[in-house]
Image (cartoon, rainbow, N blue to C red; front, side, top):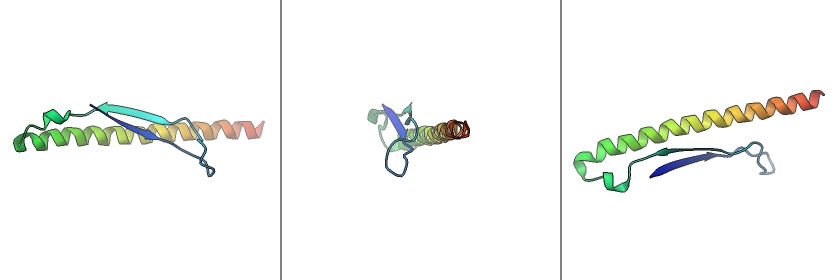
Length: 78
């Protein structure tokens, strides 16, 4: 299974301000939750992967936002 996080940055009109950021990661299949003795370890694996890509997605989205800001500033100064 895969977990996909998409980050959209929009202007006040709801139009995209930058390209969407999409990141995905493998997470455990439902079948890996085989019982109470494995639940904690499998859940931890899923949660750690989710937190990792959340942080990565936000970092990339902000980088894209700042790059767009630089482009717009350069155009306005020309």
